[in-house]
Image (cartoon, rainbow, N blue to C red; front, side, top):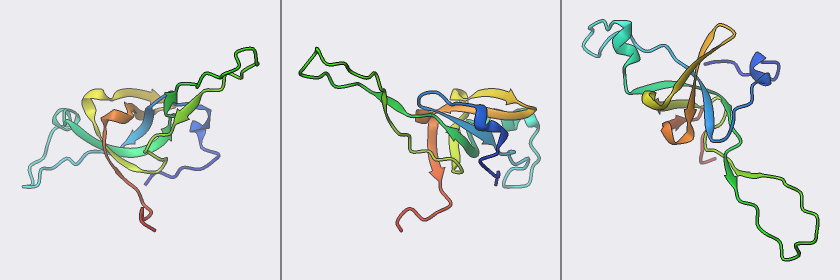
Length: 126
């Protein structure tokens, strides 16, 4: 598991919108029957897994219009938060992932809609 701390070097990164920054885990190099797979086959898998590192603010919600148009309004954008939380293990579609390298580390940026499954370390029903 990747250790996420407040003094993490990724604190300077801001993820935009409904996107999630994921650190991919190294895929298995064997099939269930014991055959070794070359790296090109592993990278072409449709579903990959990784640890959620950072999460964007979510989907923007339209601002409601007020009944009194002469009042000054603040342009504060509100967001509907995403389901993914930092530290979750995510299964995502590789075809929608954008691979990036930041400070010699490989990451992927994935839209929330491309995440198929989230595994959270705490119990959801407590």
